[in-house]
Length: 114
Image 1 (cartoon, rainbow, N blue to C red):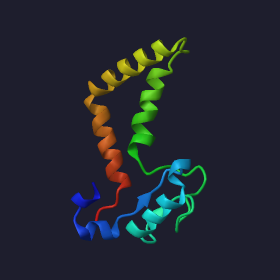
Image 2: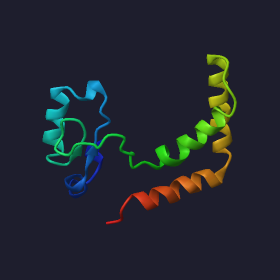
Image 3: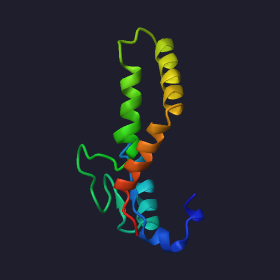
């Protein structure tokens, strides 16, 4: 996927690792060191991710929180009910254009323009 980006963009791009144990193995860190020299954030990287650091993602700040509030409005009794609520909540969000607009606006505030 990164090959689709122009070289001049890849040179200034930073990678934020999620810290999952499988992504902490030496081979992954070596790959990130080669692909993003001194430009990746995460466990064992050149820039350590601060604990409890918010991801700079409007999905984390806005969309998932809204989805969670819809799904967990009342206690869930079964796995089947959870799946049904997730499906219903996703459909509800899809049908609310204002949510998509808020996500886009949130993203514009987070991502610096070049």
